[in-house]
Length: 358
Image (cartoon, rainbow, N blue to C red; front, side, top):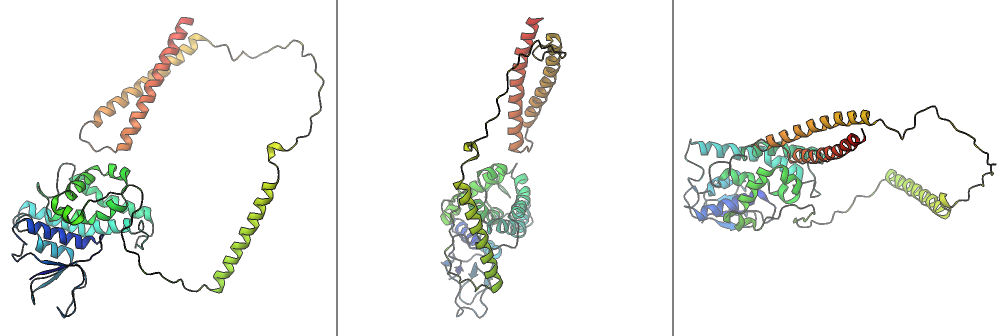
């Protein structure tokens, strides 16, 4: 009997990829190689079963003494039902190979680079913002393709969707918050559609998307004892403690002093009041305005605001076509249009008032 060895960790997406493929094999005509459904084993294979243990999980043993296959891509392809990837040489088969390769070479490194720092684990990418930028660049081809397609190859999930969804499980669980999912709307719609399929749900359960609060599912590891500190490190810590004590003493002295507002101010000398007499002004009084002049300024300003509002309305009308426009740009244009229309109403009231004054 064939045995499928997988990792028991809930976030081990290569093993999840093989388990979902096995579910599709059970629901279809059986695994692609034509054998029976494998038995699932949640541990590495014992050394007694093979002199050459597979270097990674998942691994598939095709019967006692049979062929050993390891790695998510190869194992999932063997377990996937024959025919769902399209016949050899067809357009669907080529698309499946394209997206499986893209998931392995582009999506998985970008997803791990963006997720591992969020989980407190080490990553080859030092800057978290650079890692998020790399993930966004990896998602861009998916977003464009899924704008006009439900799935990556055909009208039903294939090995391409399985490879890409499992590669993006970690970002959707721990990194991509609701605002990011709105930016990648087509990818988010496709991801939710796939994980709600019965074969995905049987393995993944209810996939909880990241909402902003971290809920780590990894098991706690053994406590690591810190190495002893050197004399230089102890000297630096002593200097830091001394600076902190001085700062706290200074803060305590400032708290004991009365606030600046409560300190007594010296009394100013009383000045003798004098009669100012008659005051004349050579400059025009600022309170007086010329209605005709102000009316002309308002009319010119209203014309400019009206032209701006017209441009914003035309741009909003253009956005209704299926053209990719970021949501932030649409919201900014709507807010600016509302502000411009409010200013136009105020200008109309002011123009009516000045016209009555003429």
